[in-house]
Image (cartoon, rainbow, N blue to C red; front, side, top):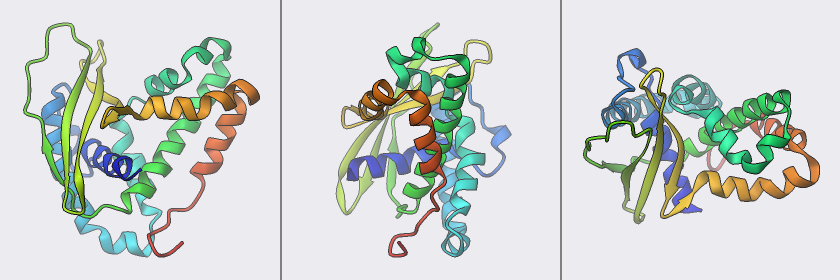
Length: 213
């Protein structure tokens, strides 16, 4: 669990940007990750006072700055797996919306645990022509815990040439696969609408700072 906490903190820090987001070139995934990481760490430090007063500010930050760098629809469809073909267009759209809301709330809550973790990003590599999915390795260095190795999976939009994250693999364990296993049984027994409703409910929970539960 501690590994996932560290991993989620880092995915937020890599794929969110509060300053000049339009200047970040999303067609260059390695450079994109480096830029948004540097900008976001600076922002988190500068906004700590406001966040302590109102932790829900983190939801706004994540919604506005993280989600543009995440391919929520692609991730949600992969999570549904074999259930996807059994759903209606309306059910799929609702699930994508609910999954997005859940990610915003979950990432905002985990971001309260940010404590200056050091990040070592893999050096940029040449991406083969036509390759649309890549993994970028990141080492999370935390003095209180062993080093955690995380692979971020990114997918290229063939029309725009831009890259977005859709999964992360921490120490060999995929976030999407974990959530798929967690929700697969419920979808099968109660239907996708039930899971969507649960995700919406979870997303509405207020953000709590550690010690203020």
